[in-house]
Length: 274
Image (cartoon, rainbow, N blue to C red):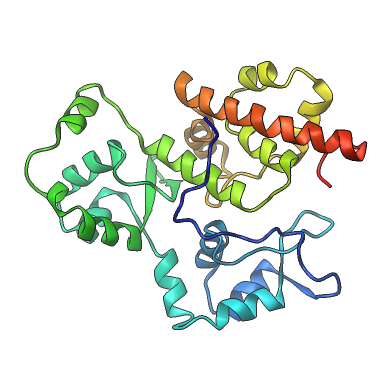
């Protein structure tokens, strides 16, 4: 099955589509001009609400002034944008937004009703999931029956089996958002390969030269991924598909993307993005 982006994710333009002579600004300057904090700006870029331009020679993302003006022209800026990127961390804070208890919130999240937008590792080396406040409010309004009363049969089965769908739901969102940021088949293939274990990539991409291209195009770790080795060891497993069924879906999508990428290379005579 081909992996697609979440339907409610905003469509981002191809970052290669900027006007050639248009000046580009760094992330810190762009955040300042939009009236956003660093974390707010990074989340807005992640969600496709602010579209990046061409990367600088050193790999840093740059932003076109026209894009910043487009964002600033939205009604209610910057408060409306801040509301879209606001997050809460953990079950206690998330439960207060839903108007329910932490235990129920955790069950809803573990059973896949709530999709994390990010994560962090606290000082006790415990993983803390982040959720968009606006999405939690929308869920509470849409599914009031799940906020009280007995758990539905599917949830009871999942909890009895010790299931935790939060990592999988986060990966689905993460991959979907990355795919929406590019139309280049090699870059799309690199996104899909980045969430597969090495043995799956080796099986799907037997050509060593192609694996080098995919590795070079692999997206960086998501915003908020810890840099300290001990914390990175806790969060690292989140970046890769866990179960065979999930890995199989991404591998199938990778093979589909590679067929398009190879066709592009055959037409241009070059391997890699054009």
